[in-house]
Image (tube, rainbow, N blue to C red; front, side):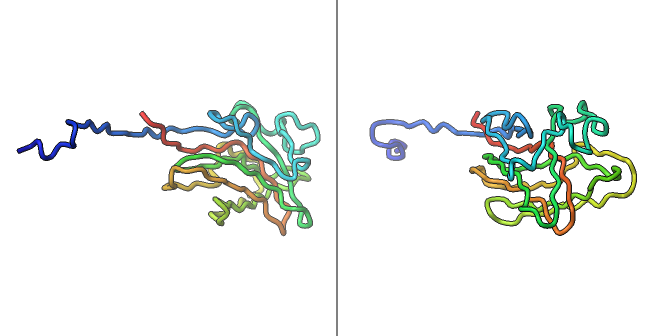
Length: 181
């Protein structure tokens, strides 16, 4: 009686597949920890490697490289008439998190942070930090988070916004990927 339930030619085995969620990083300098893909900074001439920048007002005198992912960060300041400064990164995963360094009062330096995030071409969020006048520096600040993404390739675009002078100290992106067992 049961033989009618089996496919012609005998029994077939079904092998279940499962996936494990793993976290990966896209460092500002070294890129993706697995794929090696680098973030794309635009316009490239307007971005500096903060850890080695000799003309940046916010540098290693204020930022502690031992508290920054990989000891590096990218620094840019945009002015109202500038072409928007952007960072683009690609990843395949189900969640993404962007982390920056956020500073407050620095003499003769813009410390307002005003960012808009686009995921796969759609506006996905924003982050604004208005300096509070203190000399505090905050590390690993989550400036953008989204979860429940499909496990497919995604493009994240981070755009600095005018009309105000705005500064960004980009540290890294973390994302969750699904790996087969």
